[in-house]
Length: 424
Image (cartoon, rainbow, N blue to C red; front, side, top):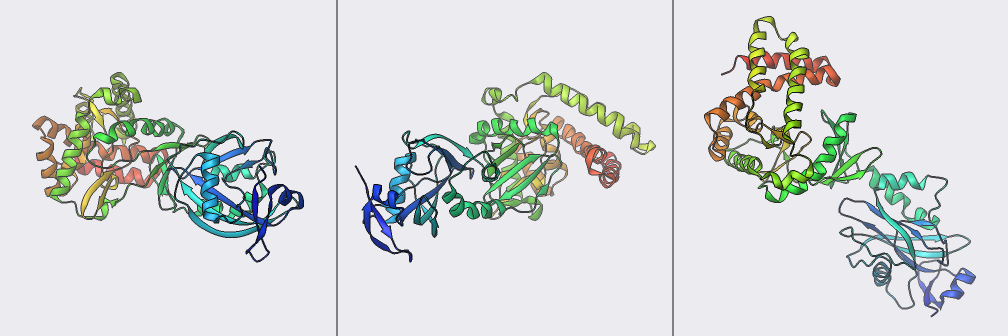
């Protein structure tokens, strides 16, 4: 059946109709729609057109759409094409109208963007292959000379893609990874060092498994790109607790969170690769060996024996559970005066649960610390182990300064070691 297509004049107004075959044969100016489809991570659905398409067969495209039929509202036409091509029914956000013309086609474009849950049903008559790509990767491919994209799609939506890619905050420099806010909606994290790649991937397996059990929000990262590795998660609402005064109620929430985390049954996360006691013990001993040989010699001589005793104390076997491994105010989020989330899980592993209690009990405001201890049900033994971990904190700062942080971190860490060794 030859569709009757809506024709448009040069001013963007309806100007009659014509059979689709005539419109193509005479390259009549008509109306067409284009919809960029994004998933919950902001990726774009990119597909290859079949060889039977009447214009630009076998080309790559990143919109769904087609001609507007006579007497059809463009928005309804966009919805119809989206359902026909990808099996998606969703609300569309207008991106404005634009014009395109070349020797193959000439039309007024009605542009839209939409989001879906990532599940599409491509129409086999029109789509040969499809995949979700990050905007950054899509822009790279558009520049590849061996890949032929639809010229009209590139012309009509290319600038919009580049604007989205430019919506990035200045990178937040972490110790292990670089985090960037994307479009004010997502966090991208990339490993600073090669050995951080595996922990980042581990987060994508672990956090979805334990998140439903936790009383505070946590990120749900997914691998966005492999080369280079980039994981993305929806921005967890809130601001770092370093910017707010932590209260007793916050401490109650933190105590409840840690109690829940440390009590999660191993079968919940066993399949994620986190349930390996021997590996956990080996990693701890390897780290303590580095501290012994690379940090202890820098400690002032009068404090070295106390430092050696501290390392021995931390090396003792303890109960082990799943831990966050790097809790501090920068990794807690607060919103509307209440603690709401816990972020940065790169160090999550099996370990001494007292490590998670160290800052909460010995580095936080007293009302907060007391509420954590009460809600968690801290024992005297856990108090002692948490204090040891608290004293060990600056040692890691020195180690970081020796590898990448620089002399400033070494000096600051050594000051902290001397200060904390003498605490009770």
